[in-house]
Image (cartoon, rainbow, N blue to C red; front, side, top):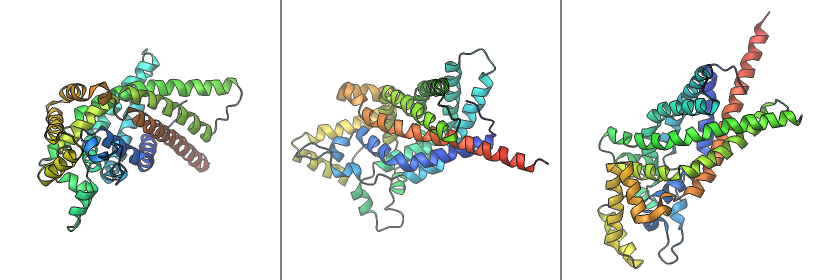
Length: 339
């Protein structure tokens, strides 16, 4: 299905889709980040039952401000690059799946450049505890999780530390997702036409897009979960949010000992993960595999698949519907102005 959209249409539709999805699925992303943290057991499980505690579900919108500010331009940049590259490659002899993979990869490289600082800040803000916010609430802005996370960075360049990890996750994800998405969408539309049930309406476009995007996104999410876990660890280590320090470290040690576990060993484990994050993605992956096994690399995979299916379906559904709406509105205005 093709649209005759201007770059402005694509930018507006992409930005609106990103804003909508961020508001709706951000809490799920926060939970996923906390589950993938190397310190999740100490912070988010109860000592007696070893079950997840209430802390996991507190402050689920922490850090959303920075992401919304960056996601809107990054999403617009992604779709502008994606549509432009796809259109250009459409005049070549490349198979459609390869064209879609190349176009989505080009879009991601541009998008990640804009998004990385906000993503690093967001994930560190998601890990700020309720007690940290309460302890700092006597000063202006200090009770804000984003401001508390920002104070952990000594240099702006630290906010870019996760670019390679973010691109390393998003490139294979989109390279898998978009060919599957385009194929499913084309196949479903063709099926509906053969059955004589196609309506050509904007609602049909939205429905088919949501189903196709959700299916493709969930599959790609499961496959790329290990890369996502590594990306999370690297971004958390950029601000040192996965290491208890000072009084926090003493308190953490007491909590761990109360659970009958070796406090020194567990804190050292978190510190090793942070050092590995600074060393690079390969080192982080090896450390996770060594200390937590294959299960550690796929931690949060089922949850990530769920929220990615929801997020991708809404994201591309709103985007495609928005493009069609803007095109129809512009065409209608042009026809109305024709004498």
